Structure formats: C-alpha cells, structure tokens
Image (tube, rainbow, N blue to C red; front, side, top):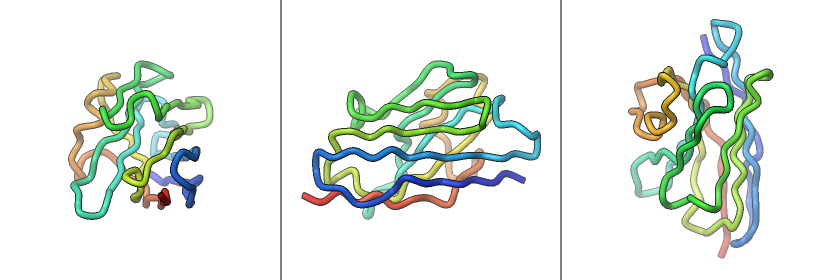
Length: 130
C-alpha cells in the first residue's frame, strides 16, 4: 500500500511560480529506497516525465522542456518530494503526478516509466494563463 498527498497546484499567470509538494507513505514505512519524480498530463498529449531524483537526495534529471525552470528536491527524512516551477508558461498547464519507483538510484529511469510501473499519486492541477 502506497499513499500520496499532493499539494501546491493552482492557477498563476505566465511567468509566475508554483511549488508542488508530495508526501508519500509506503508499506515499507519509508520511501527512502525509491526514486521520486513528477509527471504531467497535458490535454492532447501523452503523459510526460518532467523531473526525477535519485535516492537520498541523489542526482536529478529533467525533461528538456523544463530544464532551467523547474527544480526537483526531496526530504528523505519525511518522505517528501517537491517541484519548484518558475517562469511558468501556458504550455506547462496540466495535471501533475507524483511518482515513486525502484530505480537503482537512476533518476533518468524515472522519466521513462510506464503508467503501470511504480506508484502514482492522484494528481494536482496546474493552470498557467497567458
């Protein structure tokens, strides 16, 4: 059993910022052994891996579309992962999902997982107006 509490979504004008948060509880009592990340579902597009982070505040990986604007971080002691999103664009609008997956510490893998791999949160809406 894995449970997620996602927060931080909302509506902002273009150029604004949002910070998404996700706290995870797992059947192991900790999420420290999992890589963590964020996906998004934009209307009319396939679900996209946005950012991933390895175990224990390890390396990070980003989709090209968000590099330099988004920053992923984790608080392993509290099983939380964050996504700081700056310089938001209307094309960033969509539902953002928190994910955890066993990945041998490789955050690049996080960005490639299929919807039936790992564990997924319920999603939080981000809307960026032009």
